[in-house]
Length: 79
Image (cartoon, rainbow, N blue to C red; front, side, top):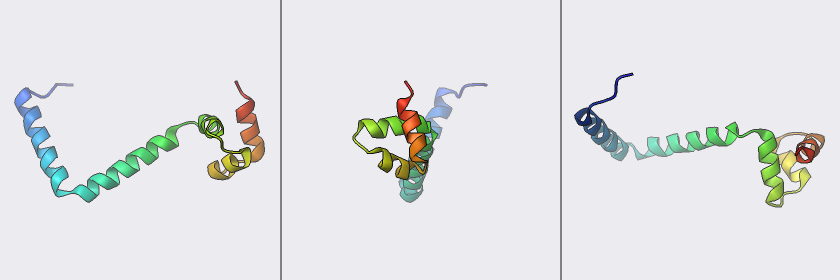
């Protein structure tokens, strides 16, 4: 893939800045959707372990992640 020239890169960056300034709500919505997708891409086992380490109970983890208590217990026992 061919890289943009320095002049083209500057023009693109300036156009993006102008668009962001004119559309703050779209930028905000995009950021929310982006980080939600990122959060959901973390494996459920890792999320369960992280929640447990921050003090959540197994029942609270199961409720939050919409999984069974047995599944939470299994994930936490894994090394």
